[in-house]
Length: 413
Image (cartoon, rainbow, N blue to C red; front, side, top):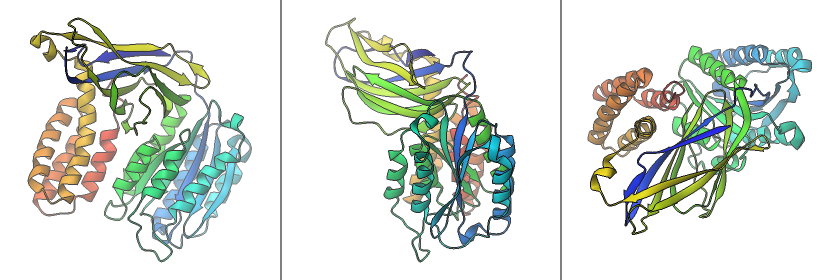
């Protein structure tokens, strides 16, 4: 695997604190072939999932089983008032037809939304396989839900930390969240948050056709994976890490570990596309012009292999003009990430009642997204501005921006 690094600027002042943005690009070797998948479908079977939603979910999952390969393994878990493993993580070569028949026979949804039980059962499905069964495979959960977590009486649970902690602990099993229906009915903030913690995708499926499209896109991504579990090893840290985010083929923002000297960051699977990250650090000047300051060393660990170790450095300068130079690829990466982050800031501004700030952010973000060629994001932002001015609900607009701004595969080539 080849690692390429670029700093936004290779120069910094000789004294004081200074932030550096580093673009990291990982390119798989041409000989790296597709690897099989262990995937568990975690399906909301609470009462709100009845009718067309339930029939569409059953038919879509059944169709997906036909498109997966014989060496893939699939498990199915339902959650409502309790949770139940419908099918263990089993080979499709031997169980495809049986599994499809079992899915078609699923009883109608009922009960409340006990997501905690569902998550625990889904991860336990992986624990039933040996460690060797999970090596050199993508290990992934796809959560399908139209609501938010509820208690035994069906009342919404506002505090989501316990769900986030369950997902966060599973460092080597990724999770993608699919929100089905209107974002007025489910919590897109919550589903997108646990998708980030699960180092996976987020899809806002506000109609059943989009649900099928999103599920197909997710499976296509899994089928093109060449690395099951990519881990970035940061060592020799002489700077403070402020942010780490994947920016291609999709955006994922990671929790930053607290270890000051070094840490390993599981980032999930890797497809045939180039995978790009942005690392933002803060470092101290040496007081000497022309000195080299190492920021960190980086090694990619993947499927029991390691890449070469790359040392990222920056130089000091006394020339003010040197500091205005910005690498265009790094600048583009920053803008791609900024569009996604601005979507969260727009929502936060609206929730706090600051409509003027939200309007300014919408205008600024629309301009950036348009310059990047993010047509779907630009369209969603324009619709958001219109709905906001007309006093309409903007929940679906905000969820669409979250969804579309994460998709960056074609932007960072």
